[in-house]
Length: 239
Image 1 (tube, helix red, strand yellow):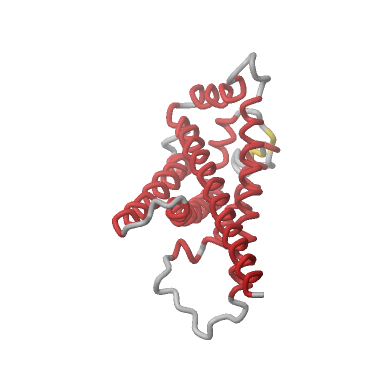
Image 2: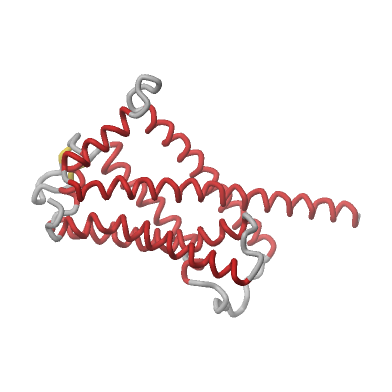
């Protein structure tokens, strides 16, 4: 009986480690993607022609080896697979943690945890909802919510979609994106540290401190970079 219990415990431990590694790997995929996506968004500062040329280049990249839009479909498949792996691993790990501690503490103490770690679950849900809206607005349906508050229209001009989404009349849209970027910053901060820890690079106090700094750098660069376009657009710098 004791041997069976030990075997089950070892298998459970290996499975948990595998889930954490899968979550870390898929998280790294998302970090690389948001960095590249942020770079593309910042093309808006170069004007309509540069931004639209960049958007079109993504669709023609690799031709004739790849069909039109081939690169984007490859990215979508990789990101969808990473999303399933990331969310699935998070849910599985959460269920296991709950099963190991079925009775909640009478007094919950969060002194040792950061705000970003405590908001990972609900922040992740909020980001998932934001991504769905973001895809509907800019990729799947391409809904133009701007143009002075008129009836939303569908447009194929990426730059105009971007500009019209963040006009002063759409201040609420700017607030939604800024709030989402704040959630993204918290998620990236803790996620980056957790990925580095899972991969075994936080064995010393110095390495843990560097991992935390790396988390803040990634969070500030990505969330800050994404926030620049809506802010500079709503104030008329990008038009």
